[in-house]
Image 1 (cartoon, one colour):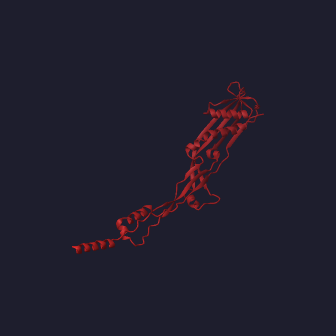
Image 2 (cartoon, one colour):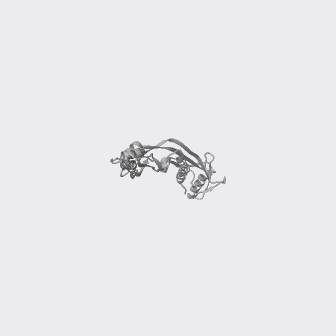
Image 3 (cartoon, rainbow, N blue to C red):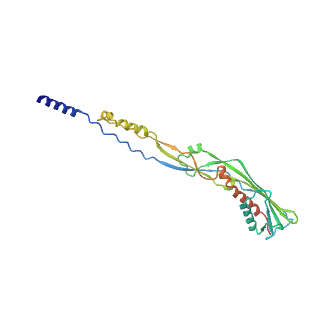
Length: 267
């Protein structure tokens, strides 16, 4: 009996001694530092000066402190534009009145705003092109923006005689008015492309079976792979869509109106 007990003890001790201890669990490798950099692109277009035609007839002299009544029956004039035109006449030392006995009437003949063909903006090469510039310039060589053509015309009439003493017309397109370049940016960003592969490998190698199997073996954990990706362009400044360009129209009308009124020769 004692012999059996001793034999069983020896067998159990031997079995424990030959049981394999599993390898240590693998830790997730540290991710590389991912780089991210933002670049800017500038797009420009050709500009034109406002077209202006002004004719003043010598039949009646326009003299300082004479009165002028503004007539807006032929055009839709906002209160703000009316106020701005009144101030421009005051700056010419003419008095604006609402009475019918004025020396002159200033008729707003035309205040036209028309959407025209889109304006094309071309990319402008920076003084020091960045590495990606050529590729991006080929991919995004131009930008198309909405365009508005504005026209304003006026006529100054001598009230008592009915003689037209001055008439003028001006026009400009929206791109030539604001003259702002379009500024866009984009980002070059590194991303890991095989993260799931690395995670799956670590998970598989940390199972009980795999840990026993790789005991004493040199295991190569897959390296993280990175790829640089470019974001799409994002506009930072410069009016381009219809809403942004339409917002310019009140200023365009005032700009053209002020140019015309400044052409009136006041003695």
